[in-house]
Image 1 (cartoon, rainbow, N blue to C red):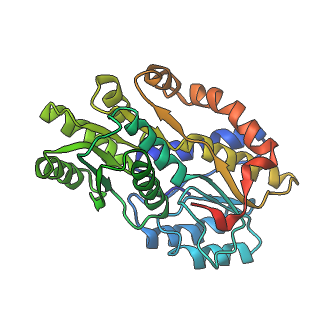
Image 2: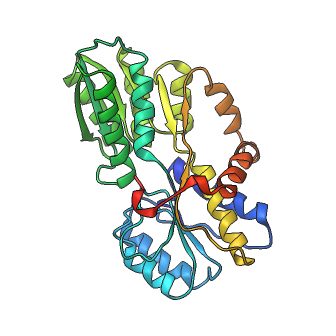
Amino acid sequence: MSQNTSRDFSKEMSEGFRAGAAISGGVRTETTGPDTHDGLKQATLLRDLATRAKGGIGLSAVAPELVAEPMAQVVEQGVPVIAVAGGQVAPGSGVRLLIENDNYELGRVLADATAERLPADSAGKVVIGSNSPAMPALDARSLGLRERLAERLPKLQVIGPLDTGRDLGANLNTWRWLAQANPDAVALLGAGDVDAINLAAVHAEKGATWLAGAFSLDAKALQGVRDGHLFATVSAEHFLKGAVAGWLLAEHAKGRALPEGWLVAPGLLVQASNVDEVVRRQASEESRLAAARPKIDELIGSAEHVRPLDQAR
């Protein structure tokens, strides 16, 4: 079950889930989710899905705390539940496996890429925005960004994270305003997928010289990297996370025990040097699966990728 059925990252996760289950074989899959970010609707859909998906459910929570109770009820019914993405597992959910990036580290990755583009004595502003503040994954990215920038470029003034909004149009207007209000900014950085799309658009509109970067594999974000309007975008590799969840649940249905803890999935920094390769990878579900397959095998084959669940960030 995805966070929503409309955004690129959720579609990636659902496609990965189906592909991972197909690798194992012998199971039927169903993907669902609310049309938009709607935690209460997701809770309702989860209860309904549990009446059919007795072999297990992979769930990417809009807001982990809103689905903790229904997740606990599903687990108590004997239905295995894996949390996929979302940044954390809410206490009381009963879920013992989370497949997620180290989002704090992904924030540091984007900060390092930013620092490599700026002089060591840079003293301007960096503005950080988040299209979904209070979501654990994006908050961790923002924190990693802030702290690493402070380490690498201590003279910078880092502002944010500021709420840029989930709605595509409102988010675009917010970034326009932030760019206008901070003419001395050396970089505008977003923590989310909508941020990436609109930062590329604003950078192009203004013919800007400031750096723009965020987190997305949306086609518009990748084109932004190609065109030079995003110097970098970080992929949370949602297809891979979904594929690992699908494979594990399919294997569990055939008797394999599920691991417990935080299964740490890798991210990917996309820049001019590798964007064409990533675009080719993203061209079809088959090409994405071919690229993900070695990583799936690595993640499920080694205990070194599993950390305690309470360390998720």
